[in-house]
Image (cartoon, rainbow, N blue to C red; front, top):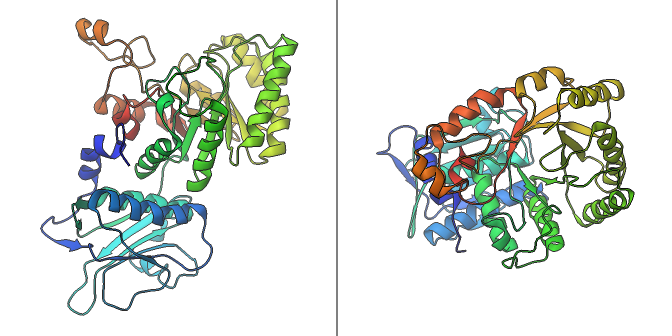
Length: 432
């Protein structure tokens, strides 16, 4: 599939830098390998992992590796995918080669390569702590492979045992006219881009289903249909589907409030998967907690009717100290079960004090702006005015050092992030 920009291509140097352990003079030829999966029904992410591996290799090498659910006997190299503790007899072999504590827990994985010898072909194990772990193990493997026309190679030794430090790792890919890219994408292009993000460890996508009433002339599908299609893609890969839904009108307007609730219910009903509803307190919107909280209670009742495990998340963007205090008092007194946590974004109260004030039973999600260069949350420091004035807010802006530093400064307060993005200009920043 042709792409506007491939995250894998734009960030290839990142993958190569991380994924070349050991002696590069030694390697495995996987051009004749067989991909082995466990028999029987499998979690969606485990199914997606095998498809991801085979299809991405074929696209870059022209070789379509066969997939089987039994161990081959014809002496060909094997790439085995499984969930630890599952029914596949080879699933626990990898446990003998790595400390299980290093990769136990949600989305953990182990990748182990055995070059083989004259008596036994090469074997490569990708074993996940769960179905998602298999998928992220495959993503790591794809970043390690050396792919060229009719060639699939792997440098060895390779042994990786790891698990994510942050539970939420995603990006906002809002299908709206304001984006510099997303409004022109088909569902197929969205899927390919999301697959690339998965290779770099993303487990969430956030859509913008309502805000911005303008219709883009580039949209190949109506917004309601694309909203549903994005949910379907996330369900297929077992990654979380979020939506960003501000109230950019006064919640005292009873008719508009009723219309907004109807609009939400139509969306919730149409989506096969929905995990999080992010309601920004401001930017846009300017409603006090006394109006926001009853509206969110009404939303929550509709949400759980269609997606019982989904939660509502709130940012305090634009809240002054008094409004923030009143919201905290509500959370501390009522302990609402429908609230997943708070979101810290541009114009939010400082992230450290937010974490300290928020009860530990609720999570804190970061919403960093990685798309803009000036008049934004993280402007380019000491940028030449000639560039700042001519390129403006949203040029191609790879900032690997900046965003690595920003991440280290702020992420430790959080349970993870879903970034603010308006297109492909920030692809490198997404991978960082």
